[in-house]
Image (tube, rainbow, N blue to C red; front, side, top):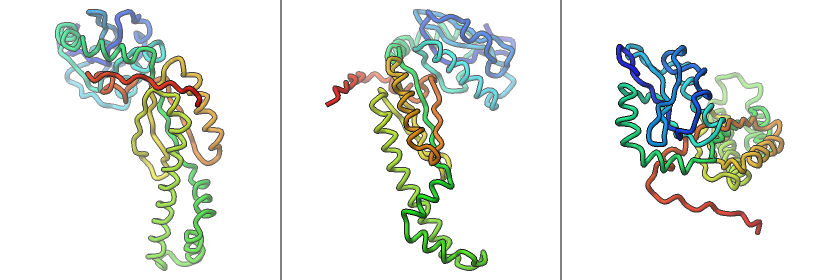
Length: 267
């Protein structure tokens, strides 16, 4: 497959017992009308589609297509080892003769580690009005400055406005630290691993990925629902999953011994 101005786009690797039916009707990266297929060798299968070589990749549709294929595989059954967006090889012969052959042992180890596991991503942000009310109630200095500045023209009290803004930001940062610990306290014990990234906005609370065993998926989702109820009206919480384990690929591929899971004995 490929050639004549076409190359082979690789989404990731799965075990070769997976059926093409899960992804065959999904839009492909680079060319939505191209079929997504599985190329099998040695107990593994690369998930691929043809892409035109004269068209740059990276449109929003391309990014969505990449994730949609991998997440469809994760939702159907694990394991799936996702590749970074933009992985392209010459043709299917390069997939079997180079990619799968040379990476076989690493892929085999990673797939085994990811078997029966999938990623859930939690995105939480503060409801702006609610968190500002909390800051005003808890911080007398913020209340004082706010009252002093009310009714003043925009150009007046410049330094005080800067001070007020900094105090509000510091107060929200302190809340974020405490609330992030609460997320970890409630959800961390139900996951095998977690990875957090910095929120992308001032109202952001946490962006966190959790690797969850299938046997604890319902328990994890229930705990997230309970957290959403606990923070009702002050935090907007969104749970995405099951997803391909994007944030846990490096650990799965690592040659280091995987640590034994800790069993919660309840005391």
